Length: 371
Image (tube, rainbow, N blue to C red; front, side, top):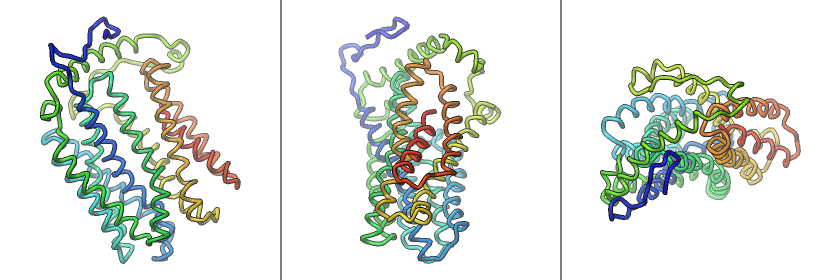
């Protein structure tokens, strides 16, 4: 097979046929982050039950949710440095055990203080997991497959909130809200063992990956950088005139990362995106039950609509960026910013009809994830 630059890429190196073990690693990452997302998003379903039992206000409910993100934010940067130094194997495994443990503890709470502290602990424990998982994808996949691998990984973040509401509502109705956390804690313990014994930081460290696959990964990375450069030099006509581009120096040290306006700009954009995303995950279930007087079963289905839209948006955004916009990411980011802002205004005046509510939530999730 020949790439755009005329370089030949074969599935064999010499006479050895390459293994494809990187896709097994991606499957483990997908399931692992699905569990990670499920353990953080189940609070939205449990919250109406918790508010009723502990007689807590919306302000306190917000604090319970917010303390998770405090811990999550605090742990991620140190986790990045630790993973760079020690690799992903032990750190990610420990993180999975940690967030599974705090998920279980949330089912044992007897006071609001316990809820806040355990949510803080959950955030601290979850922080290293996505850092390690994205690092693993970066190490295990050549450039031409990295977008696909990342898209599959991101799909797990949307799939979990689709599946969680129905399962969590069923558990709460039949066994009580505490069992949501007890049951959700179990898969993570198995995943921690799987990660520790199967996943390695780099492909050459894994006994199931042969030399041909390792060379394919590293050689493909170099070739894809050439292809991306060629694609991004092509013109998009009026879009290039509307959106200005400029060449920047490579950001390859910690000092450059902290001084880069592009990094800070992306951080601010991601902050705003997550503010909307997790605001919906946390509050939509309570809103549907309290303000719209939905039954818990009906709420479980409608609350999944933003994540269904998010899954479609993530896939659609990737295709638009790669195939239409020549791998230029800025246009899709602007599409997300503008359309999500419009949908926020629409949600302020949410209609009463359940079909229209579901459609609005679906479109919000779709717009939020295109970029």
